[in-house]
Length: 352
Image (cartoon, rainbow, N blue to C red; front, side, top):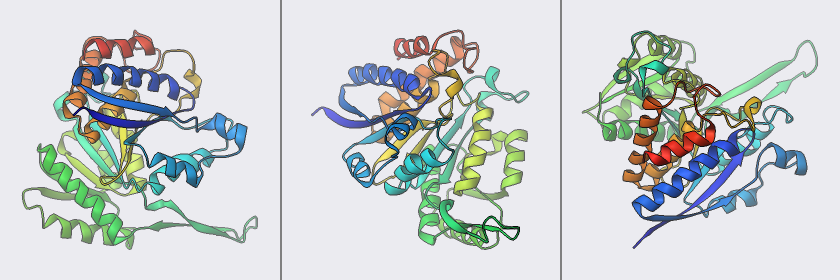
């Protein structure tokens, strides 16, 4: 029986539609090669939709998304819309409403030419960040007191639950076991200052670790993590951390692997619907120029295929990306690749 999937596509803003176009081109080719069927439905949510309707996502939109096998997202962000409106109203609403409690970010260097660090080779930069995706400071809990006065106080609460932390950490250990490389999970936190939230994170981490005696554990403060990611990235295998710290260190990780043009991520609900995206944002200054790098979006497609169980197809896409990146491209940066956005997509299809 032929496998079939329903993919919700959100091209989004800026260069999002351009990179999603190339990802869908690759999806069409790899589906034919590996004999699975799919159908897509495009949703026009984003800056233009908000400017036209004054709406982001409604509850009925979330219910509509629940009918799909996965979500493929281009980028959200429009300079004409106040910062935070689209991010909270679309990205965070999808993540929270669909309980996509894992943000998964592979950090893998394909070619030493693209790494800004001296003397680092692909085998030195190959780790994964597992970021808790639905709690912490991003929960949006807080208040103003005495607003617009000299005595104003802004309170932002980091909300962490045992359940939320435990399932994130357990996912990290399970992923580390499946990955089967250095077999080490590093907890990245700030136990010396953030004594309530990180006391809980640390206790849960070592409690869960007892169930995985085959996996080594260690701990680093987030500031030290940033230092070691630059000095000795080869030390890391799987890093697990909270929402805010994960958001920060994954952008640093993207630079280690060659920039946002190659960095993909997944918002994962292991029991439900997951969403996959390039992490570089909408890059509005490059819109319509056909020069943006689509490889991050194509890598996100590979992650989506793996999540759907299409392991061979996923590996074929990643292998094609590696071949194109290492043998064809001059750079991973927009306008410097030596090829147009569309031509890079074609190259990936040719190398499947």
